[in-house]
Image (spheres, each protein chain N blue to C red):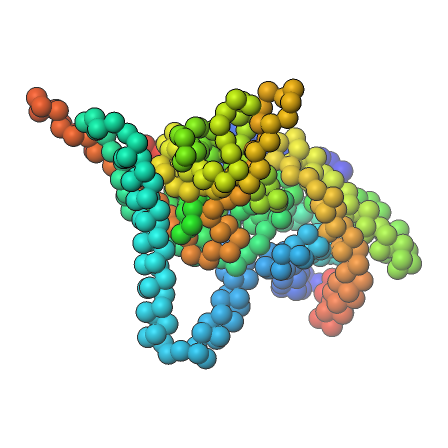
Length: 287
Length: 161
């Protein structure tokens, strides 16, 4: 048995290294999801059933359906309002030049969380949408209040989202007050974010609202990421210590939005150049 | 008389229930206290049926747990393999030792399992460490007697292995 153990142990180590370096095993992982997804649904089922029983006892079936539609619409509308507010602010600050490109919305898809908890050390959630609905790895996920995270794994009917509070997540942000840029990484189970490598001369203050700067080409521009709750400069240290509370209700929202970044729209040049219109989600070829 | 598939349903059902228990949502205060159900069930079957439940099964189970939890592919596999190997080696001592010694052994095995996972996560730069990380070892040790008795009961009732 010792020899077999050694063989499997080496195999596991190889799998780990390869999976991390080259993501060679995405197909195998998806294959295993055939076992895993039913378990997730088996756990989610009773929770969902209990919620349903509660609802049924208090209202009728078509009121329920209308309720769901209204909720989904509301999430979409609130998301649009957030985006419009930031755009308005940006417009009043920018010089009135001819815009050569503008980013607008692509498709939005509402998804629900499966009532599944995993390892409390990592901040992830499972959604009930997968490749069958066109979900892809790297896709941003938002809720009505702000950015939640990005998709890191997809299987046919479910997908796994890494929340921005996970310590493996980093999102480029911009201060909505003065346009200063930084990167916010998650602090893990603390449920907050930290801005990294911000020089002590930077102008960040407690209460500043941070939005996504879109510089990574992943998260849509102008989405609320969080509010600064602590901004300390320690004498003798070159960097500030900035803690951010996320805007999205990361641990409470059940309905979330999957976003497809839209086509880049270019205004046609005078001498008849063609506008480029590759859907930018096909640019998301992931390594 | 016993074919290799006799009672496979019980073993599979126990693993599925353990996997479900490992992801069932818990209130926020309880999140760190979750026992390592899958590991406990694996240890039980490795103890009483070592020829059937050995490192190969542990490897597959570990991979499933990795995919379920979204962890590095192979991390739990390695940790479970090592625990199963140890259970196999000390099988006889574990079976005949008095209950309190067995429970202590479970504490050591679970802590070892968590330690291996922690090392692997740190190696891959994925660790997020708090003192509460070790709580599952404690709660696993506390629920072990129940798991043991329950599975023994089902096992003898259905005449498995």
